[in-house]
Length: 385
Ligand SMILES: Cc1ncc(COP(=O)(O)O)c(C=O)c1O
Image (tube, rainbow, N blue to C red; front, side, top):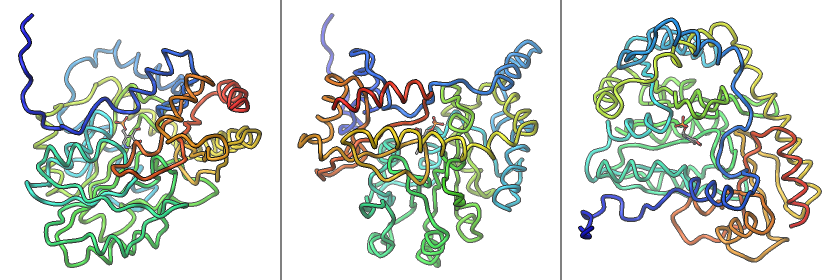
C-alpha cells in the first residue's frame, strides 16, 4: 500500500498513554498489574443483577441526552446528603460516559483560543490534551513535595487576565493528597472578582481516609457558583469498564457543557444508568462504607511494603499509594518501572509520567484496589527487589 503522510498532528506531544504502555508490558511479561487504576474484584452482585434485569425488561435503546431522570435525581439527592448542596436534577446534572468525557467536554465548553488553564503538577494525563484541543494554554503549577499540597502563592502568581479555568483534583491522582477546607477558602479568595471558572475532578470523592472529610467544590458557595464538578461511578462501584460518570454545574455552565456532550457522545448506556439509579437509592451504604473498605486495603498494602526496601507515607486518599524506591535503584522512574515489571513481575506507574518537566522523581504509583491475594503475591515479588 502507498504510504500517505498523515496530517499535521493536533497533539504532537502525545503518544500512547503510560497506563496503556504499562498494562501492555505487564501482560507481555506476566507481571502483577498494580499500574492502571482499576479493581481486580467485581462490582456488587446486586448491581450486576439490576443491569441484567433492565436489559431483559427492554431498556436497550438511547437514553435521554442528559441522562436518565431517575439517575440524575439520585445524584442530586446524594449531593444534598453528602455536601449539603441542592442541585437541580433537570438543569444542573449531566450523566456522561465516564469522568474522562466529562472533563473533556467541560474544557471544550469554556476554554477559548489563547485562554489559560491552570493545572497542578503532577496532573492526570487527560487534562492538558483537552486544553490543547480547545486552543488553550496549560499553565502548570507544581504541587509541594513531599505532601503534594498546593502552594496558593504560586497559584496567585500564575493567574493572569487570560486565565479562564483552574482544574483541581481532590483526592489527587497520583499522590492521594486531599484538600483541606482551607484550600477551598484560599482558592475562593484568589478567584473572587475574577472570571476564572473551576473544574473539580472528584472521581475519588468516597476514598478519603483517617475519618477526614472530602472537601468538595460543591460544599463551597462561591466555588460551586463557578464550578463544574466531575465524578465517576466506575471508581465508586468497582466498574471502571462501564464508563459512567457525571458533571454537576450551574445552569448556564451546564447548557454550554451539554452543547459539547451531545455531539461527543450524546448519551450513556441505558441499562447501566437505570441500575445505578436503583442501586444509589437501595444501597447508599456502599458509598458510605467505601473509605473504610479502601483504608483497610491501603493499610494492608503498606504493611507489605514495610517488608521491602520501598518507602512510603500512607496515602490520605484514592486507591493509589506512592512509594519511594531510592534505596533500590538510581534509575529514572520510567526506566525503573519497566525494570520492576520485567525483572520482578510487578507493574507500577512512574510519577514523572504525570508531569511535563524533567523533574527527577524516585517515586512510583501502585494501585491497591486489588484482592488481598493479588497484593500478597505482589508483596512477595517486591521483597525480592
Ligand atoms: C483523576 C482522574 N480523573 C478522571 C479519571 C477517569 O475516570 P473515568 O474512568 O470515569 O473516565 C480517572 C481514572 O483513572 C482519574 O484518576
